[in-house]
Image 1 (spheres, one colour):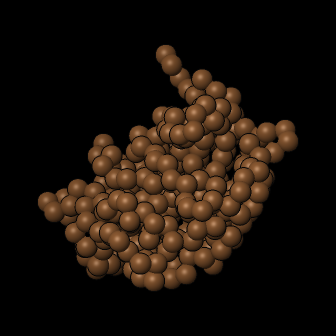
Image 2 (tube, helix red, strand yellow):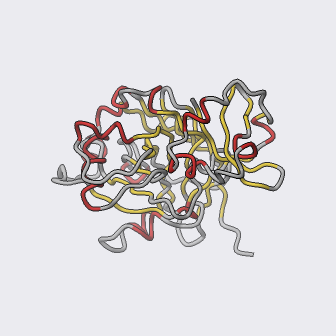
Length: 285
């Protein structure tokens, strides 16, 4: 099952993908749930499964995609340098523990929305990633049962402002410029992806493949990341762990390859879908 957050007719809602159409589950359940995160928090995904035969309400062309989890209260835990080829291209040693930084909800846009290159920098880099959406509260979880806590998976572009990222040891500024990243187009439920290590990720810039890697190349795999994060924070339904980017990033090339206004960037993951966004310059007027 594919679940998405979107806006239509002046309201934000959530729904179920059915072929190339959308069932507006939020409208039908508005008295109980206001967002997809509410559904996950209530453990009510099976309620959505019971709605899959309903006649769709909208075509995809009629909606505006939002980030899969648009709620500001959600935690976005991102993992740096977590693919072995990326570790090598950046000249780093294999870390002893996952490198974690955070993104804020307002730094993200949904599928087909514009990612913004800030006027403060020319170094706008692409980072295709697999996002893991937590389905139930997780604390002190063992890697042996870590995947039981996953609601599903999605595509993510951790658009990075490299010079701001490198200004200090903490990466937060370079990872949180307004609308510099993207998340979507939808969540694919975990039952459709029992072994995420078999997924393949590909990033394309203006149609050219710039990243292509198996998720099996993760330094710290998804069970290890859930185990690690659940030690020091209480993961809640709707929280997101963004697992890292493969080799091929713009900063690792000679000369560097930066995204510019007019570009289009795609992150496609087998079995999940394709996240596509145009690049625009910041408008300060």
